[in-house]
Image 1 (cartoon, rainbow, N blue to C red):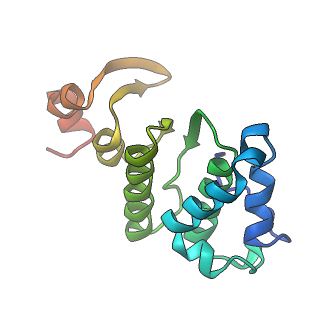
Image 2 (image 1 turned 90 degrees about the vertical axis):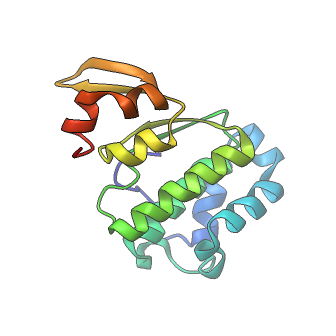
Image 3 (image 1 turned 60 degrees about the horizontal axis):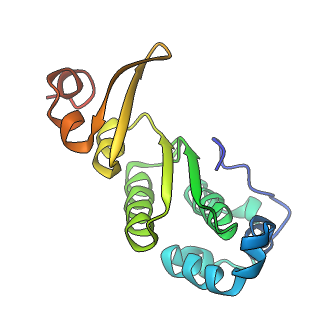
Length: 155
């Protein structure tokens, strides 16, 4: 899922999701995946015939995530899924990603500046500064590290 949503504005929500199912696995599991996506992201079900360009920013982000899931990936890569979203919508997105990961065991690679949420949802993480890894470890290691707590979590 690229940074900045990158939905196809002149296509409907459903058409955008169908484009995500262009892989062999996506086509094979399309009906089942669509049901799951619409269950996890019910706003997309409500707007399935609406043009993607008319959705709010949060709805477009849901659509971008749904389109990625439609491919039936083994790895879902997400670049800044909270960028440009209200705190409430960003919280919703993180809750859904956590739910999806818990229910599917899908591996997710998340690049995110909202450190608290990223650490909370991660099994393992890396802290980068100026392009270099300065710390890595499990959720527990990162959340208990004094440097992370001071610099990124405001503690």
